[in-house]
Image 1 (cartoon, rainbow, N blue to C red):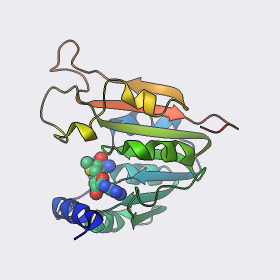
Image 2: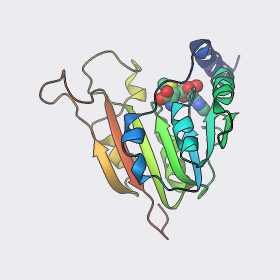
Image 3: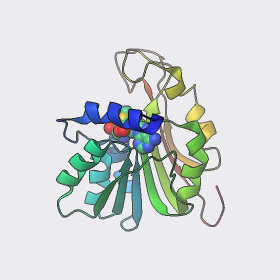
Length: 195
Ligand SMILES: C[S@@+](CC[C@H](N)C(=O)[O-])C[C@H]1O[C@@H](n2cnc3c(N)ncnc32)[C@H](O)[C@@H]1O
């Protein structure tokens, strides 16, 4: 079994019997920023709650994940929505430059992919990104620091984009409150410039 097959098997096992949960609050709370038309991508979508939100807003939505089980589950929930879910290794096959008006990445981190994600935005396109941080208040998320962001790292990874929203509560103050263990970014590719 090669690396891709073992990754797929790991995630397929995790997704068996699961249904799409709730979309990111980053996306649902800030959905007013979304364009009313265009193409969206949920990258490493899992069972695709964020893809379902994007497609529900009328965006032509692609959802990619290495897990065939997750993709099949999402396809089963898509109904008549403008949503195509596809099994795709996003590291081997990243999105092409200037192809999406909205890209959502939730709880997935491959630092080497970040330049391709930024470049895949069309001019004016929006990136919604939320994933785990090394600063954390409990065991939520991956144990390996390789898959967790350093402080403010999301800002550095997408330094070529214009920040519209950023949140990283870290471990400051009353840690029983707030949005902990994650960093959230909404950033925009400038109109008419490369990222
Ligand atoms: C923690 S889950 C997050 C899923 C979803 N975005 C969410 O927030 O619920 C990470 C996802 O990344 C997917 N994944 C891991 N490596 C991948 C790759 N190389 N290409 C595509 N998807 C990948 C897994 O199958 C899994 O669905």
